[in-house]
Amino acid sequence: MAARLSKHRLRSRALLLRSVAVGEADQIVQLFTEQAGALSAIARGARRSSKRFSALEPMHLLQVTVDVSPVREIGTLAEASIDRPRLRLATTLRPMQAAGRAIRWLRSAIPARTPEPALWIELNALLDALDDSASDGGEDALLAAVGLRMLAAAGWGLVLDRCVRCGKPCPNRARTIVDVRAGGVVCRGCGGLGLTLSSAQRHALVAALGGDASALARAEDAALGITMVDRALEAHGRGEAT
Ligand SMILES: [Zn+2]
Image 1 (tube, helix red, strand yellow):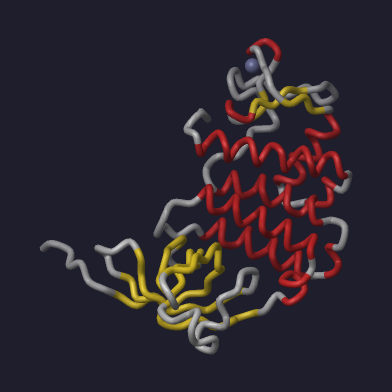
Image 2 (cartoon, helix red, strand yellow; image 1 turned 90 degrees about the vertical axis):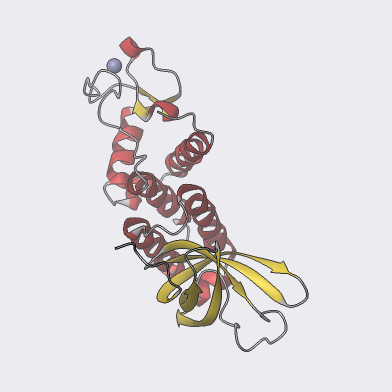
């Protein structure tokens, strides 16, 4: 029996990724939902009545109800409310900038309407951490660590302990070359070209990939991690990466 294509109502926790005004009163929102991944929906009258969709703000954890049709790319937003506010994050510049970058990374990494539970957990953990004043000054380390983990969750994880070409383990105390487009470390013998990492930096990045953001406490190490994530996502976006 053929599967019936039917409309359905999706109720899920969600994050607002982007919102674009359309016409006089409507708004098209791109949401990252826990249940169904990324999807776009029209919020009718969102710009006219401030009450109905007043929860449509980035950074907060939202609860949304969307009417989804299998034949239309854009669903209809029926309800949105704030499930858990992130007030510090929504009002403080440095955490907000770090969160904005992570959200851009997410947008470039996810296909439409595919649940991404690992990415959902990583991104929400980052936003919760950035909302906590304990992260003050450590925003870039958190962002870099989550970015590396997001790459892995998207299936593009960087190999940092051995050569991606020949499999030779990285020597413990030597510099290594990371070629982001090749997917990680490329040893000298395999003609590595790319970012040069000291052994301390490579160990710090491996620890961050394992979940220890504090390993990237030095500003230049966090910046290196952020650059690697940027380059990897650009390469995958252009289809250059292997
Ligand atoms: Zn090699």
